[in-house]
Image (cartoon, rainbow, N blue to C red; front, side, top):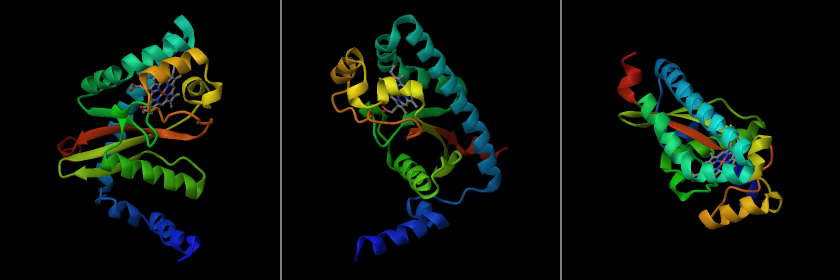
Length: 201
Ligand code: HEC
């Protein structure tokens, strides 16, 4: 079978949403979908606000070297802090992780693939996505793209400040999260929401 013929069914599956079911996605009712967008959206905005504020502060107080040190020691802790405040579980993940502790599980991989296919197909970043991840859990996914400030740590490897690169090499020997350009899909914020919190509303 030639490559083109092989690719057509995949494209059609994605276009019709069947690929999501094949990836374990079950039906999400419109009410639950709306509630998950609200709860997940507000939690992911809280995390983005915290990370951007802290990262900007660290940059201003000591440039990218200080900021990369801050990110590597505090990003996971800040994420769990916001999760505790929200009473939800939050995570940042990507198909190209810097920290293996952020690697995607099976449902997160399905979500990342959904965003990648939708972007390949439409050229646009889709809206956040809601997934039924089990009997008792829904997941909200906020897609993240690369903006100019992200390049000092996720840009072309040859263009990252050598002092920043030295920290990355030391702390993340298997780093996959470089060579991005502005506008690239970088990954997601995943918010896990207990089903009862949405279904009771
Ligand atoms: C000052 C350096 C720095 C900047 C600027 C930066 N990051 Fe990161 N980023 C890191 C480090 C270090 C990690 C690994 C953190 C950890 O250990 O969890 C990381 C991890 C991530 C992760 C989690 C997945 C993974 O690869 O481990 C995402 C998603 C991410 N960054 C997105 C972004 C986006 C989007 C921007 C711009 C808005 C950005 N980053 C800007 C240094 C940076």
